[in-house]
Image (cartoon, rainbow, N blue to C red; front, top):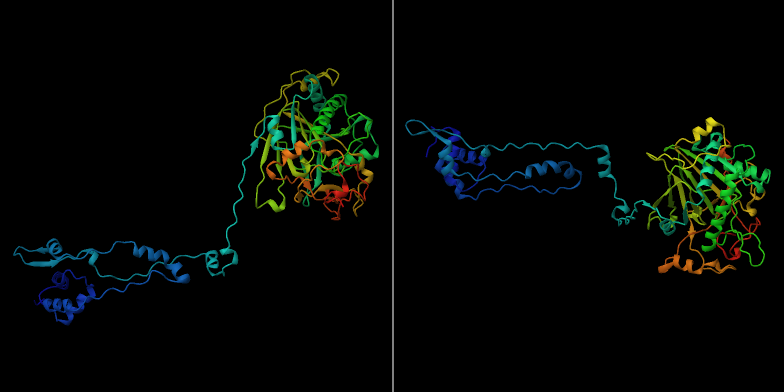
Length: 524
């Protein structure tokens, strides 16, 4: 068949129909027509006589950065479906148009049979960070097994005294004072709080101010002159202060009740070796384990006044102190969280406990709280105004001031009764190179397991001790060391001498203690 009178598209269409079902590239068809000088039949015979050339398949796997750069383009090319074979019986009927005489005049090829024109794949934009990540040599840790994730515990709210005692080293006592005494003490402290100050100290080269007002009081029969003045300066972060005032009468009444409750609770609990052994008593008398001789008072006015997570310094309290915290006025949340020892951070995480403290409630932070936990009073979005159930005492202030005090209040008064131990009086406090009294802090991040009861008191409660270690899990609530550190930087424009040393209870003449110092770790 001579195609001299046909156009090229018609010749290609006829040649494709003659060699069907072979699939041949259009360039091969053109080469066959050229070799047969336009003879379509001869070209078809030559194509049928030789096996069709298979298209060379390029490997989809490439190495190195070139594969990464061309990855998206390769994916785009391989995603379309393969072209369907050309069917001359149907395509010639559908695509060849006839004139009136019935002869074919032109042929229209389908679009998927159009000449393949190779296109260069688009280049992917690479950032410098991605390029450096590709070029960096592999680290030995890349193939190391991933560390197991430590489960995180959601916060837990403790409402009842039973829940507080179960999860924390604290005890909660609601309605601790008679209602009339609680109201008198609230009015007295709220009236006095107008003159209280905010603590200021240097921190990271700047002066910071506490987000609440505070004051310091000394018990009436325990005024020791300069000794208590130095203790008050410690409470005010070392800045000069006037001699602290004594307990007002309502505070003294409340202190006697709280002191009795604290001693009863302490006799029920396991004692720690470094706790104060108590004052000497006569035969048949119960020892006085705790006697409140100072009180730090705080006023949180409004929902946003707060104090961040901290543990109380034990400079004059000594190791394992007991602190009784009385709440009056607006209800606020008190939070506790454990400081996880350094070698346990990969095994467990801390949990935050929230305890709502209502008016006339007492929370006792027993021994180990300052060594193991930190506590705070966070800011809140809203608070419920406190409506005092009783009027203020008429002899407290003038008529106008009494009218103001009788109004609903947004303030919480917090009084923390503390026992400054005789063996940690200010005269025995080491001084740093700045000639400023040091502060005493526990090494909270390095703790060890408590020893079994083996002292002269036999801890008074072997049963509680064994219950706390049920299941063979010993509780690590004994700190290894206490540090005396420089505190001059709090007021000396942030400049201190970086002095520190380990507390040596034997060399410093501390005691008497509950336990035998000779057998204790970290006491030297």
